[in-house]
Length: 128
Image 1 (cartoon, rainbow, N blue to C red):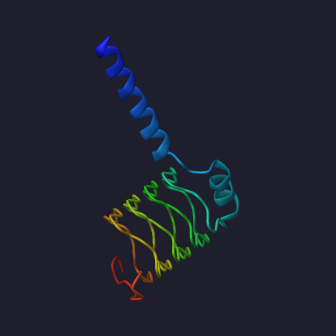
Image 2 (cartoon, one colour; image 1 turned 60 degrees about the vertical axis):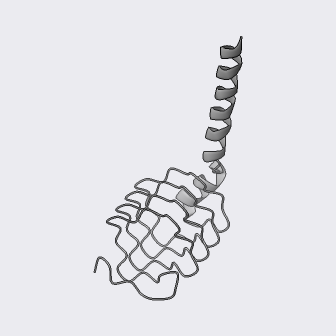
């Protein structure tokens, strides 16, 4: 009996945790991919790996924990976007506007940041 209760509680915790990590809004993802316009969207935990998001307007968008590996974000506007813990490895962020963007714990390994306006207003030369 004790083991059954413990297993049941463990499953509830896992199901609840999984639901909170996959909180993206499917309509927002569809709009973004079709129009590249998604201001103030909920894309938390979204899988946008290898997505073509060139010149996308993502101002004020929640991209926490989003998978943006190898995504093309060239010249995207990410002002005030939240990219906390987002995976941007090998993403193309060349000439991207990141002013006031939250990049806390974002994974940027091998990301192209050439000409990107960084959160502090400086222009990156990384990858140029």
